[in-house]
Amino acid sequence: MQNSNDIRQDMHATLHARRELGPEYEAALVESLVERIDATIAARVQAELHAAGAAPYSPYGPSPYAPPQPKPKGNGSVAVALGSLGIGIPLTAVAAAEAGAGGLLLAWAGIVAVNLAHSLGRLRHRH
Image 1: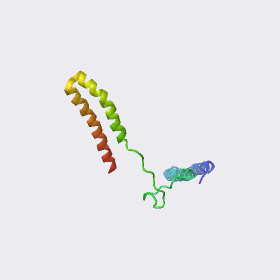
Image 2: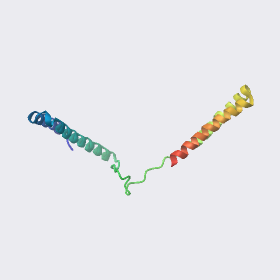
Image 3: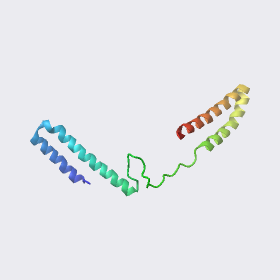
Image 4: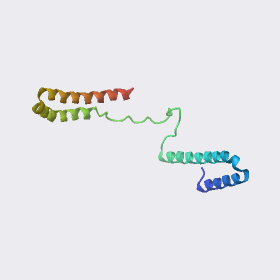
């Protein structure tokens, strides 16, 4: 892995080569320097990930030898259901007192819509 002194030396060498070769080689020199800097950055990132205990990246998916990833706990459905009931009780009282049966139906239609949207969202993310 290159350190910052190596990168400085590469930069100086690239500038020196540009002066000697002329502007027609500038694009190739810049591309070469960028590739070396990219490789240095990638090596540093890999070293940091390795030091942190992260599994190396593979474009082919997780290694069959990698430990299984923990599954997320809870799905929020209980919280949505309890929240709906908690909001539904006072909303029922206010809607019935202020708007009658129409307000009551509208309030509970909104609560049902929220729960339905939550359930459909969970089904969509499951597949």
